[in-house]
Image (cartoon, rainbow, N blue to C red; front, side, top):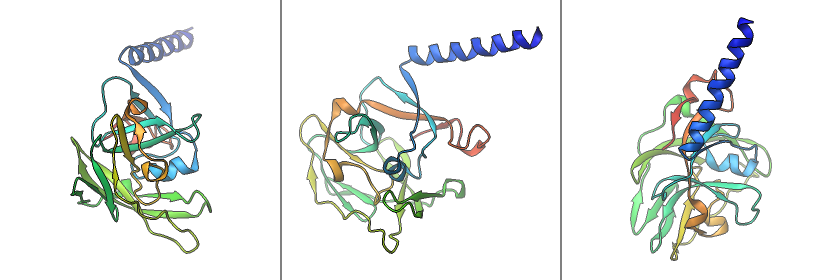
Length: 216
């Protein structure tokens, strides 16, 4: 009987948390095991991570957002807003350049944030060089993948000027990307959901370094 009551309490608490999150306009989302998406979001996130998506307000420069994929609407793309209407966006290596200002990476990431990604075409494991960069109101991690023999990475993009009511997305894995260099700018209204918090990682609750993390 005590065990049954304990189970009822647990179910009640979980239910209350879910209802509370919905009232506050949060959605829980488990990042799918999509090889293209997984390659593009390192080192910030991984496939299998369970995150909270905030659905209110207007995301700004530097925010990490979830948008329907313009080429396959049944899946999502995740990228960082690197350009707002009227901005001229280009890249210098791993660094984003917006209106002639270069957002350079600074300090190296902590060892716990080191990552590898699988090349979407060959599935070869590739190490990600992780560093921190300040964009907008926060500091986030960006990654650079070293090109492996037989695994060509996407070429650098030309300068793009963002049209009205659109945003330019940049993948956190800067040179193994699935972002506006691949599919163009996106309507801002389609990119209104911000990824703001990781509940736990793909490795589960036992991964103490990657649970209950604010996502910049």
